Length: 112
Image (cartoon, rainbow, N blue to C red; front, side, top):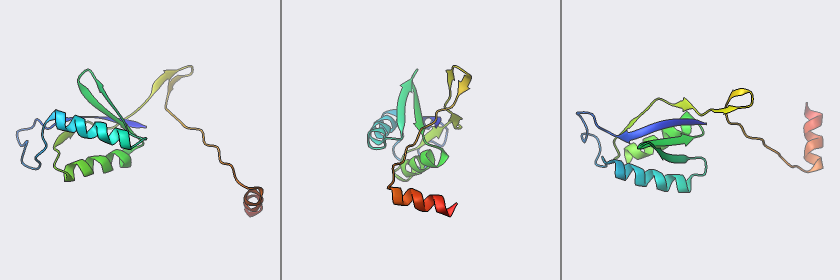
């Protein structure tokens, strides 16, 4: 999982590419996106809008969609989401369990 920080475009060229320029519009859009996309997490920490997603592609597609819809925003470089655990710094991971019919597991075991 990676995270990026987004904010309204404050550069001198602001408003030349898009029409949706305010932090409020960006926040409203990202809140709706986070409700519809279970892999996307949106937080506001110390007046900073933080987006957490599955990876570069996941967040890149969202940002490109926003750009095409007229949003102008500044984006920080992506950072890997970590936490302090028992063994030091840990990255998030998921456990996956797959249940399959016996015929499928027999077929797969004969192919290896």
